[in-house]
Length: 312
Image (cartoon, rainbow, N blue to C red; front, side):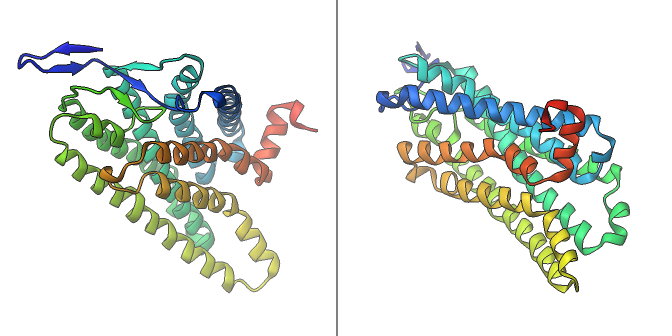
């Protein structure tokens, strides 16, 4: 787990993910819950992707972004769950230095992309409800493709910066990460070199993804609610609200968990508390496919058409 550096320092070559090792009596229960949730999330997101890909009626901007959200969710959950499940089976859950950085990269890339995509969907619903006559022009295929590509590229670049800053750090021991996956804050606490630049970048990322991005979503929904209240008929209000209710539920659940789990200084990081909040956050993430499908008649209709066994 360690190698000797040229200046007589011992550098870490692997990390031990502490996870839920302090509560071995819950291993079987947690393994069953996480495996079930991961299976549901993976299956649900794959079904959403297939339904949107093979149903011409779902070739609209909203479902295009939902397709991207499902893809992001698969990457996000698959980057941590297999290793977390392994940790609940084995007595010691270790991960190589390179594997830890790779996990950190894909997790951060997917999680940040999901936050931006939620704002993009809010903007899409705002355009559809507030400016219905200009919606098809404003949300053209080219513009939607550019938005999605911009989200993926921006988040990949931002994550590359964080991963690059992490690679320049030295880790001299201990090598126990107080989490069930590799994440920036607990890793910074283990570094024996200066983490000032890393901490500054985390604050800037929190400000952009957690505050500015959240405010953009709130503004979009402010316009949506204002437009719905101005509608004259109750039927019109109900129809307009139904088009964005699923997304609103997901946004509220997602940001509540994100603020509790991530918007805090590195110095105030509490391992056990963060593990708990992150577990809640990812349970919420796994429920997204169910929320989108159970509250969306078009998606359920697409499921019944594509998969006959959904008819009942």
